[in-house]
Image (cartoon, one colour):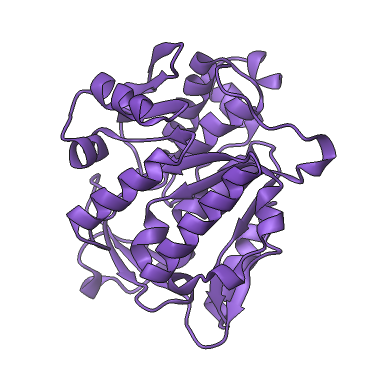
Length: 328
């Protein structure tokens, strides 16, 4: 492995800590415009909590924190994430703001439309004063995404603060750009995401993000550009084609898994990131990390919902047809 995972023995209380907004999602049980839909399944949606849940299912100690409204939706989110084995002890409840909501709209076998109701939500106001930095600084890896700073100037300031303080204690910074242009202008997104990327150790760009951030659509050029920025490890997502992983000493392309008729692609990238981080924590090779990431990401698309398809380790081993290397 070309990147060192902080050890610290029992002083590192969590393997991965992550934070960001999670919303209650209403997933329609039928296709078509929402004005004709009358029944929904209630679940949760949030990139960071997706990663946390996926890692917990793979057997890791994970913490997630955010700000939730003092409402039934907030209590539901906390209960679901805690029930998945994720530590939620640092979640803050805001009595003055509400928990965000999101609705999906489905049309046959295409990616769903997504409608957010999150403006001025509790999670868009995560302040530095809400943080337990000692908890964050005791993690091996801090995983963040570009969604959090897009929600508000307050969140952006907090995200920068967390990254700075975590790096001071040797915590590895894992960063998924996860650009959402519905949340901010392209130029602001580009400037902020590139700045955060330069402060990260591990980054998970996609081809679309490489085009927006760097003006490149070649995965090797994208990967090596991020390495030149100072990232220790760049994991470029290629969708069903797999991924390309590179450190300064090693570069490897890993072929993906083909899912003929995916049920839902939302959450696949989060599962991919979780699979890769799981491989790092298990001290696997870059190729093995990429294979595990591809498998978890592919399995996420087999089930309707953002996080429902994330596998346990025994399930992903069965999917991959292997039994040995990921037991390290």
